[in-house]
Length: 94
Image (tube, rainbow, N blue to C red):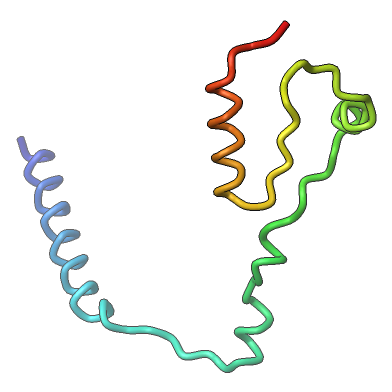
Protein backbone atom coordinates (compact mmCIF):
# COMPACT_ATOMS: atom_id res chain seq x y z
CA UNK A 1 0.00 0.00 0.00
CA UNK A 2 2.87 2.36 0.83
CA UNK A 3 4.63 1.62 -2.46
CA UNK A 4 1.38 2.18 -4.35
CA UNK A 5 0.98 5.60 -2.69
CA UNK A 6 4.58 6.51 -3.55
CA UNK A 7 3.98 5.48 -7.15
CA UNK A 8 0.79 7.53 -7.41
CA UNK A 9 2.53 10.58 -5.89
CA UNK A 10 5.41 10.28 -8.36
CA UNK A 11 2.94 9.89 -11.21
CA UNK A 12 0.97 12.95 -10.14
CA UNK A 13 4.16 15.00 -9.74
CA UNK A 14 5.28 13.95 -13.22
CA UNK A 15 1.92 14.94 -14.72
CA UNK A 16 2.11 18.35 -13.06
CA UNK A 17 5.66 18.84 -14.34
CA UNK A 18 4.54 17.93 -17.87
CA UNK A 19 1.73 20.48 -17.69
CA UNK A 20 4.13 23.16 -16.42
CA UNK A 21 6.66 22.49 -19.16
CA UNK A 22 3.98 22.37 -21.86
CA UNK A 23 2.56 25.68 -20.67
CA UNK A 24 6.03 27.19 -20.61
CA UNK A 25 7.41 25.92 -23.93
CA UNK A 26 4.37 25.14 -26.11
CA UNK A 27 4.49 28.46 -28.00
CA UNK A 28 8.26 28.46 -28.55
CA UNK A 29 9.86 28.08 -31.91
CA UNK A 30 13.38 28.46 -33.20
CA UNK A 31 14.64 30.93 -35.77
CA UNK A 32 17.67 29.83 -37.73
CA UNK A 33 19.58 31.67 -40.42
CA UNK A 34 19.17 30.82 -44.09
CA UNK A 35 22.63 29.26 -44.37
CA UNK A 36 21.79 26.68 -41.73
CA UNK A 37 18.37 26.07 -43.26
CA UNK A 38 19.91 25.43 -46.68
CA UNK A 39 22.31 22.89 -45.15
CA UNK A 40 19.55 20.84 -43.53
CA UNK A 41 16.74 21.42 -46.05
CA UNK A 42 16.04 18.53 -48.41
CA UNK A 43 14.65 19.33 -51.84
CA UNK A 44 12.20 17.14 -53.69
CA UNK A 45 15.06 15.81 -55.85
CA UNK A 46 16.96 14.79 -52.73
CA UNK A 47 14.02 12.80 -51.42
CA UNK A 48 12.56 11.29 -54.59
CA UNK A 49 14.91 9.30 -56.76
CA UNK A 50 14.18 7.38 -59.94
CA UNK A 51 13.92 3.67 -59.28
CA UNK A 52 16.84 1.72 -60.66
CA UNK A 53 15.87 -1.24 -62.79
CA UNK A 54 16.92 -4.72 -61.72
CA UNK A 55 18.29 -7.27 -64.19
CA UNK A 56 14.87 -8.96 -64.43
CA UNK A 57 13.18 -5.65 -65.24
CA UNK A 58 15.85 -4.86 -67.86
CA UNK A 59 15.32 -8.24 -69.52
CA UNK A 60 11.55 -7.76 -69.56
CA UNK A 61 11.95 -4.28 -71.06
CA UNK A 62 14.27 -5.62 -73.78
CA UNK A 63 12.07 -8.62 -74.64
CA UNK A 64 9.32 -8.10 -77.24
CA UNK A 65 5.81 -7.93 -75.89
CA UNK A 66 4.06 -11.29 -76.11
CA UNK A 67 0.56 -10.24 -75.30
CA UNK A 68 -2.74 -10.33 -77.13
CA UNK A 69 -3.82 -7.15 -75.38
CA UNK A 70 -3.96 -3.85 -77.20
CA UNK A 71 -1.02 -1.55 -76.70
CA UNK A 72 -2.10 1.67 -75.05
CA UNK A 73 0.21 4.64 -75.36
CA UNK A 74 -1.68 7.56 -73.87
CA UNK A 75 -1.05 11.17 -74.68
CA UNK A 76 -3.17 12.44 -71.82
CA UNK A 77 -5.40 11.13 -69.04
CA UNK A 78 -8.66 11.57 -70.97
CA UNK A 79 -7.29 9.66 -73.95
CA UNK A 80 -6.12 6.90 -71.62
CA UNK A 81 -9.57 6.64 -70.09
CA UNK A 82 -11.21 6.47 -73.52
CA UNK A 83 -8.78 3.76 -74.71
CA UNK A 84 -9.33 1.65 -71.60
CA UNK A 85 -13.08 2.08 -71.91
CA UNK A 86 -13.00 0.95 -75.56
CA UNK A 87 -10.78 -2.03 -74.77
CA UNK A 88 -13.16 -3.18 -72.03
CA UNK A 89 -16.25 -2.76 -74.21
CA UNK A 90 -14.81 -4.73 -77.15
CA UNK A 91 -15.24 -8.52 -76.94
CA UNK A 92 -12.01 -10.56 -76.99
CA UNK A 93 -11.03 -11.68 -80.44
CA UNK A 94 -9.16 -14.95 -80.65
